[in-house]
Length: 346
Image 1 (cartoon, rainbow, N blue to C red):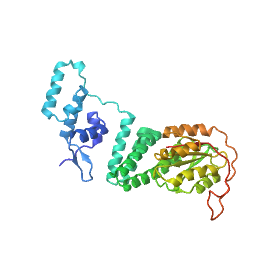
Image 2: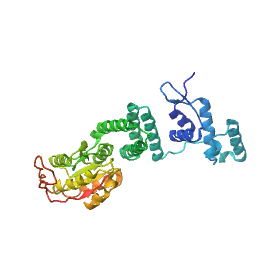
Image 3: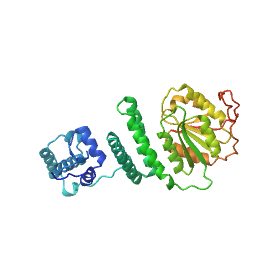
Image 4: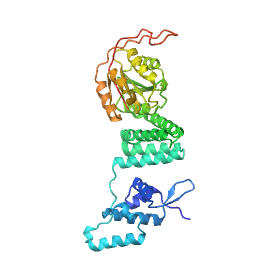
């Protein structure tokens, strides 16, 4: 049997986007293409012909729901009747329709979810690379990686996805983002930021996205990793002479100890060191964040804007935090009284 066409080729032939073709297949059962041995859809000439006819009908104003199930003869009759009523100038040949960046991002997300179902990390890496070329770095972060991470979290909580899917995606994104850090142009005096998740928070994808965003807007970012004690995070920031710390909070949403740790971190931080806290789970700790004077940028775009403002503020000389004595609780240890500004990241 001759090999069929890929969805990219079909999209170019019909003037439709790959996202639209997949949506029509899923929602209206428009096509049932064969699959290759590798599991990829292969579209026959008959599939392409049917898509072309349906696309022409929708461009004439017919809803896709009313034409998706029509047989080919009915579609051709519909188009012939429209052509008979129209002048040649009024019925131009179909032209490829412009595709918005958001539509392109939706297509990339759909491809990633399909690759995750196959546990195909190599395919995900290739999709991320193509999305970076098409959408740019910020578009990739904001429109593809971040919403895909949210969808994975929702699927995991709903029981429709496994933790394995999130782990594969996180590991692939970590590797991908790390390979691109060298592309950023920084001055020697770029402000420094350390990024981590606090103890009890093991989901690190949000922190990775904040690290990439900070680098993209000219900060010298150091990613420390997930599930770290606040003493270690503050200590690393002091040693790095950082201007800010960024934390990500994803799950769990009811960690009573985290309320204490956030307040503890504020007490430990020396003057001039700012704290940014966020993630999809941050709202569960909003009362504590408000109590310690938190601001709350709610997107990666807002994060970038906040960092742009923060870098213009002068940075006082930092004094090292007083370490807690061994074998005692930090609550009983002598702590600095400085109360720096706090912001919240997502």
